[in-house]
Each structure stands twice: as structure tokens, then as C-alpha cells.
Length: 157
Image (cartoon, helix red, strand yellow):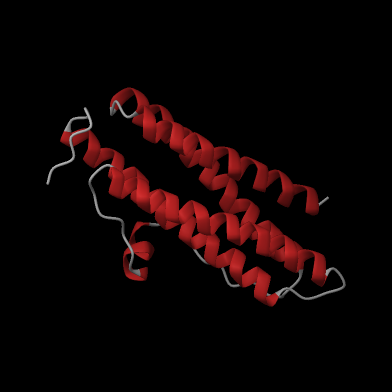
């Protein structure tokens, strides 16, 4: 059955395409954060272990919400890792160690990349694709990444 929510099907396709890339990027950041949680070492282990756990739990919720938003507008969410790797704009960089600063730098770069990408697409979804709901939805995600970037940046001082 077709989705009838007052938005042209071509606009919904464009919105779904943006959301699928966001989903893929979120999944990559989630994986990197989970990796940091599992593999961090050093004198700050326990506090950083908890920090990364909180972050990956929030990212898990975002991933689920993005996938459900894609379904809400009548499209299918990419759920296979193969799809995620084809859609993501991010890459995985091998880290030379297990120090928190290495993980913080890598994750900060990804969060900042997501911030820029989300900010660039919010107005497109609202203005060009006439989907204020998805624009507002991305604004909430943008705020999460801004706060996450701030926290990661603070750890690096």
C-alpha cells in the first residue's frame, strides 16, 4: 500500500535516500564507539569504558529511530552490513593503540562529519522535499552529535 502523507513520492524517495546515508553513517559510528568501549585501556579505563557505553547506547537508539523514520515514509531501511558499507560516507581507520585519545580523535572526526552532513540536509528536506517532519527529526540527531563532539573534544584538552 502506498504511503499517503501529503508529500510527493519523488520527494519521499529523496528523503529516504538522505535518511539511508544517515543510517549507514550512524551505524559506522556506533560500531566504532562499541569498539572503543570494548578495547580501551589505560589508567582512565573505567571512566572511559562507561563513557563509551553511554554513547553507543544513545547511538543504538538513533539507529533504530532512523530506520523507523525510513519505514514511516514508506521506504525500506538498509539492514545488511553490505548495504551500510556501500551507503556510508565514513571509513574505518585502523588505530595504532588502545588509548582513549586515539578513540576520541577518531570519533570526534566522525561526529563532526555527521554534524556537517546533517546540517546540509535539514533545509533540503524541509524546503526542497517539503518534509518538515524529517527535517525536525534530523535536527534532533544533529543536536546529539553536537553534544557528543563537545564531550569528545573536552576529553582531548
